[in-house]
Image (cartoon, rainbow, N blue to C red; front, side, top):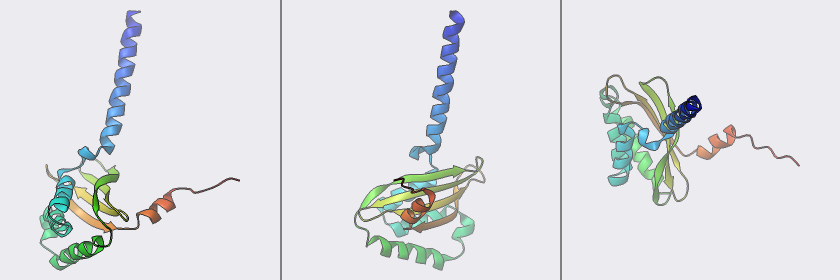
Length: 153
């Protein structure tokens, strides 16, 4: 009887711990600080400033292509004028490749439709930095391609 209780406690502990680890990988609060700071700047200042911020996290990228960075921010500002009010963001997908490389897609929610932001992040030491950053509004197209829409009659 004593071993049975011990066995049950061990099984429950394993189930709880594996459940938390799965939850933790998809938890929005588990994202690198650079993404949290990006969206804080996005909400409190402007999307263009957020783009400037995200590239400033990597000195190698920040020192080149200032014109492309500015263009990316300006085009984003123009795009969001047609989408209505900003409604917040959520993590769409997050993939880890080891402990130092991560790809995170987030949806910035607007009244009309979302914008997807893709962050490729690398942590060469203790701080995450951007390796690549893109955004687009073709979220529906990608979801349609990944979901098998079949109807049986």
